[in-house]
Structures are given as structure tokens and as C-alpha cells.
Length: 158
Image (cartoon, rainbow, N blue to C red; front, side, top):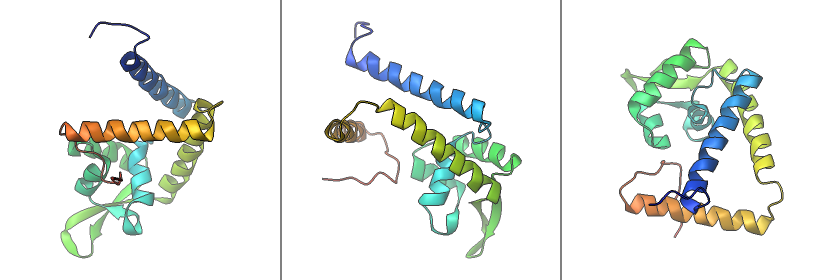
């Protein structure tokens, strides 16, 4: 592929990098950097029963590697955002759960994402947003057909 900064593929990469940098900068400004991987906090609150899951379950839910989860959890545990508890059904297994501090930080993360996303979609109509959503879902399914495992929380719609 020839480099063209205005090609769709390069614009997508540029947007992705700028969005990531915006979130990182805003998290630093708001003192939210302790949430090294906010998706873990979101999954614990919204995707699992009793806000507790194993490291393996979290990795599968988010479609990220177990070592990435382990490193992020270690940082977040040290920051007091999550804690390990023994699984009552299997005493050999630990579950990760949110602390009160983690829940509070998660709420601040949600507010930050909401503000950033609201500004990103400034000037988009509801129809344009829905069309973009359909394009993203189609691209995700195309990646899946290439062998990439989607996050478990993404429900396939036919």
C-alpha cells in the first residue's frame, strides 16, 4: 500500500492514535492514570455477576492477552482499585473484584469517556452515527473472519 495521508486506512490509524492520546492526556490531567486499563474496570462492573472474575475470564472477555491483564491488575491492585478474593466455589482460584476506590475511579473514567466521545461526534446526525456503527461492526466481523478473536462482550448480530 502506498502511503497517502488522506487514504481511509491511514486516516483510521491517525484517528485511533489521536483518540488514544486524547484519552491518555485527559486521564493524566484528571488524575485517572491509575486506571491503567479502564476496560478491565468496565468489564468487572458491567459484564460479570457480582463484579468478580478470574484473570483468565477478564482476558477472554476483553480479547486481550493474559499477561496484559496480569500487569494491569498488578498496577490497579497496588493503586487500591481492585483486590483478589478467593472463589467460594473453587478455593484454588482467585477472583478479581472492584474496591470502592475502583468504583469511584470508574465513574470518573466513564465521565471522561463520555465527554471525549460527545466532542468526537460533534456535528454528526443520529443517522450518521448509526451508519458508522454498522461500518465498525462490519469491520470487526471482517477481522473475525481473518481469525482474530473478538472480545466476548461483542454479541454477533446477523
